[in-house]
Image 1 (cartoon, rainbow, N blue to C red):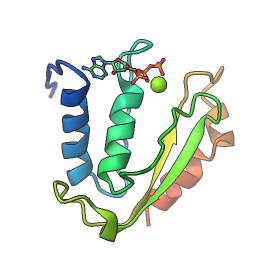
Image 2: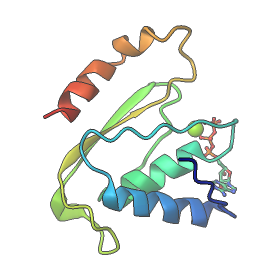
Image 3: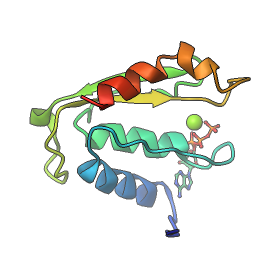
Length: 116
Ligand SMILES: Nc1ncnc2c1ncn2[C@@H]1O[C@H](COP(=O)(O)OP(=O)(O)OP(=O)(O)O)[C@@H](O)[C@H]1O
Ligand SMILES: [Mg+2]
């Protein structure tokens, strides 16, 4: 199934990210693909903030390539229905030359944690 949603501006993207954050569960993988400046980081930032890290500076992991965020059930914002503490792994795979390099970033740890 393919669903197309038009997002007219950063607020719309943030609102969609917050809604998806409200239903996201351990083991979910959200792949963001798009041109430079298309809003991938904007989506990730809004998602992480909606999962309870509202005051968090959410950098784009362009240089670190991976960032993790521990979210607590008690920090969930009122407009979010998320109820599970979990770690969000935010990978930026843009600079990788080969798929295997993702292993060096701990992607297996992310999937192993997600299988708990
Ligand atoms: N509908 C929209 N959704 C998200 N961002 C938007 C939208 N319209 C305009 N913008 C603006 O576009 C920019 C998106 O930048 P962002 O860093 O999220 O892109 P990116 O996909 O992560 O780029 P890069 O591949 O370079 O990391 C922001 O400045 C944001 O305010
Ligand atoms: Mg980005």
